[in-house]
Length: 488
Ligand code: SF4
Ligand code: SF4
Image (cartoon, rainbow, N blue to C red):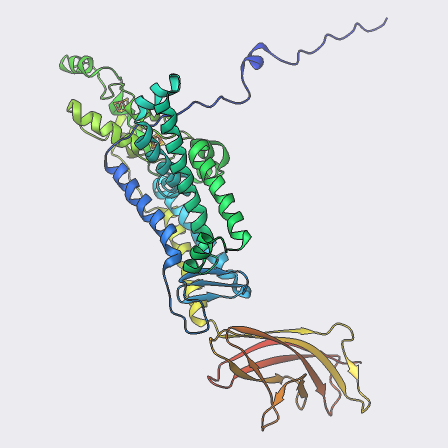
């Protein structure tokens, strides 16, 4: 008997069809707020933007042959200047060290107070905050903006929009403009930009950064934090129960209700919370989060809801701190009548702080011990050796000497490990003792061909040799190891 045809497996359920793949964006109109954390955010905003915009104009005297800009990424000459430090391309590990330090600092911040970086220091937060301030100044606070959004545009509202976008574009343009100043002498580049004599690449970069700043801070705003940035996910995996986060103390806030009703309940000795359900904490939130629903991925931990709630508590005569930097563990402890636990010093914070100290110390030590000469050697590959007519063996090398001084220096070149060897620098000089001498210009690198000839005793198949470069002025030396090759 033939098998009955199988019933088709349903591919979708009604509930699947109802659930949208992506949540539609809810337009957010954050309300202005005053308070401790708002003040801290204004101060941080002023300091960080001040540093970003003004730093390229700070001068640092390095002598006659070097740029006098304190922070400069000199790409044509492949140098990075940071005040008294000059980093050459082969010292890029300092940049790696700085990135490691930055990552560890972020981990430490996270272990102490959650997403404090996101709430106060992240460029996305800082510029979005600035753009919101412009929006409020031009179009009014939350209610006014919400009302205007629901009305037909008028000449006045269109004019306000044009003004807002013009200011946004000016800020965005300055952001891009400041960025390129880190790559060239700032005062000269400003003059060249103003007279349209700057290189095209400067205008292109300003254009790119104007566009990204205008888009990210003016339009995408909280969407960047919620959907684009990987840090909230990484942070969620790194955090622990002791990290302080902006927390709604539901042990104090619930059951929520109107101030009048809760007062009446309190007088009757019945349970009544401090939350009056005014949703001021939601109205001021730049990401539209209701913190009373618990810790959420969208919350950037800016603390503005704390300010909003504190002012409500002050008005209704209840203690402030219904929303505060706290932990869910403490909320639970209070409910159960146990003492609160605040543990900033714990294994993970000690570990991060220790790692910061170690990496910082290693970098400082490397900086203190760095030489002002560098030498690198590359052995010729083909042929690896040459037998001369008198039977002696010669190897050829490319030797590169870097003079990090800001004046010309002369160096002697010695080859150790091959007694009696004759060392010749192609087109080089010889001093009175027969040693090859090379002169390298200020802050420059010299590449030279060096011929080493084993004289006398036949060397082994491979002999370790060391190229030693000695500064004739200071006596400072640098070396590089290589091999001398000979036939069996
Ligand atoms: S601001 Fe405070 S009182 Fe008002 S809803 Fe939020 S938590 Fe409750
Ligand atoms: S919930 Fe509070 S701390 Fe979190 S983003 Fe909103 S205002 Fe900031």
